[in-house]
Amino acid sequence: MTPSPSWDSPPKTLRLPSNAVHVWRASLVVPVSYLRTLEGTLTADECARAERFYFQEHRERFIAGRGLLRNILSRYLDSEPGQLRFRYNSYGKPALTAETGAEGFCFNLSHSYDTALYAVTHGREIGVDIERFRPDVEVEKLAERFFSPREAAVLRALPEDLRKEGFFNCWTRKEAYIKAEGEGMSIPLSAFDVSLTPGEPAALLRSQNSPQETSRWSLQALDPKPGYAAALAVKGHDWELTCWQWSPM
Image (tube, rainbow, N blue to C red; front, side, top):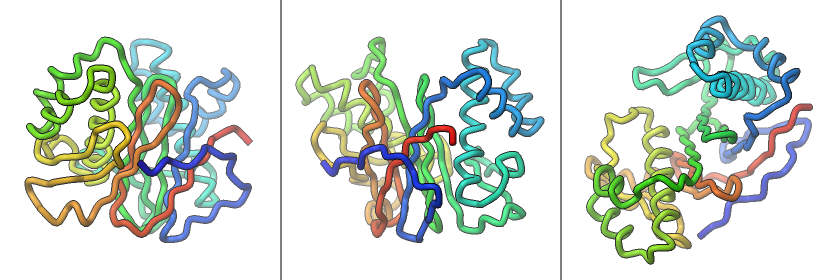
């Protein structure tokens, strides 16, 4: 398996050449004072979405997640976080609006529990997913329901102590791929195969709808922190990954 790079502190000036993919890791648990600062960058619509969460913990993590997204993107675009505006395709995939002046700028985000990942690139579609290992997940039942027959068979063949890791490898890679495609769950999870065996490289192995898909996309396993699995899907193969750790400047 190609290991993901270490999570380093970013330089003050960020460059994003066409062959670069940057992934940021951030904690969604932030001091109250910083949370209020992040909240001040959100639009009225985003604040309204935050208020719809029943539990305060979930509300605060949404505010932190959106505020951090704005802060990270603004570092590339040399703009104020609160000035950024987003649009969404019919499946809910976010992008920056044209007036932002970010033509070709692509990003994606995912969060699980208290940790978020933000993937950024230029001129190529991208998707990222992170999941925390949960002890209550019935991996074999879910695999039979959602995975392809081949994936379910590979999972069953794993030693019992590796099945949970294999399941989350598969889940995050499939989610990253459909997020990169930007068509949501209109692409059934069972319509394509990804690698899942622990220790093997992440890869898109087969696509039911288009055999050429496997040559168009590359997958990369990420190691965000103990107890989590994550994956990145990127259009093309000629790119270089850098991983950054977010911290307030």
